[in-house]
Image 1 (tube, rainbow, N blue to C red):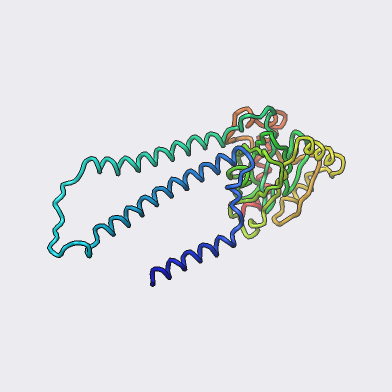
Image 2 (cartoon, rainbow, N blue to C red):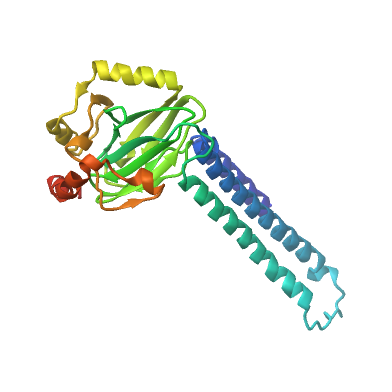
Length: 309
């Protein structure tokens, strides 16, 4: 009776918790990198589930078959020296499981780190920089910048250049791919793509202080035609981004969404000393800004040193 009550309580608790959870967006991918990540998660879950089911099935079978109540009072178990075949069997099975999961993990890691295959256009490069507690998205190709929201075309790779004006932040769009750190003093590269138009949630997945929970952004994936119309509208209506305005945006606090013509890359270029991930060609900064980046990086870090708390 006690076992049944405990089992019922466990099931009720799990059902109650899951009812209050948000949908698992990671398992609802909308792009090739997201699908690869989701597939690896499901393969791992099913592999572990099979192991658990087999182990518990054997456990119940052994307990029931060899329980004391089924044996005679004068029963003596036979003397067994051991079995080489069984030893090899239950040693090789875990090795094969680990080897299988290792192969899947390494293969998928290379896939999600590389530029998604099967697209005709070159990747759209977007510089995504973090500050307390907001995201700045610079589009050097279009010469525009947004704060706390992101518009991207579908069926085209998007290459994010991640860095931070403050503490380490983790850039994450669950339905499009895995997360990667944005750090001060270096640039990390994250390749994503969206195949399905729609609105997706993005956030900072790393604790960076009391306001990190609201460091979120919206991602709107749209057709190329709609994306071009949005870029044209921004250039016609948005205000220019000045250095004074950008320094004001960097101050700790929460902001809504805003749009500007021009980017902060002109007067506050990203770190050029280190790049990580993606192809070497795409990791190079603008040649016209490379010298300025080397000389200004230390100055930029000192200007925003108040962010590193």
